[in-house]
Amino acid sequence: EAQVTQNPRYLITVTGKKLTVTCSQNMNHEYMSWYRQDPGLGLRQIYYSMNVEVTDKGDVPEGYKVSRKEKRNFPLILESPSPNQTSLYFCASSIEGGVTGELFFGEGSRLTVL
Amino acid sequence: AQKITQTQPGMFVQEKEAVTLDCTYDTSDPSYGLFWYKQPSSGEMIFLIYQGSYDQQNATEGRYSLNFQKARKSANLVISASQLGDSAMYFCAMRERGYGGSQGNLIFGKGTKLSVKP
Image (cartoon, rainbow over all chains, first blue to last red; front, side, top):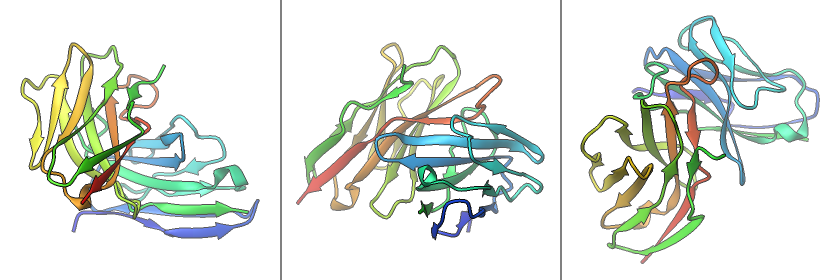
């Protein structure tokens, strides 16, 4: 089954404790992206990757890191989480980064930083 | 300025009736894609329908159709014969060619919460 898999789905952590949210897709997609969703602000792009070893900042990259060592994986790293990073996070992928490809979303990871 | 505007924060519709969710967009790029996603209370994002800027005909997918009015920069979603399971948040989104930064970014509107009444 074609899918985007995120882990963990739910996480409660404390300020400053490094964490990684994994994302993996099995569709051989070139383009991958991370979004965060906050009430009243909608979904905003954090980072994206056009292909392996190619990553770039989205609209709200502060406090996050990503890497794309393999085509299928695109982990999101919070080096020193803070309470303002409490949010619902989505990983998404598409065949390529053009205008026609729909984004396939993971199920979301709900993160709470105390 | 917002690139995607959804002016209806919430809407109600009677079961089996049709409903239109409004979306206007702003871009100077001649090539772009317009998307609608559904987010039920469980949280996942479900792709519904796509319209390309060069498509001559309005897109349709089952009970979903997109009323594309390019000159007005409008891409309204029409759901026919509403069902209780259609109750959810609906997001309009756009992808531009995006030269330089934020290539391929899917820009979302703030969403419309649809409630279907029995």
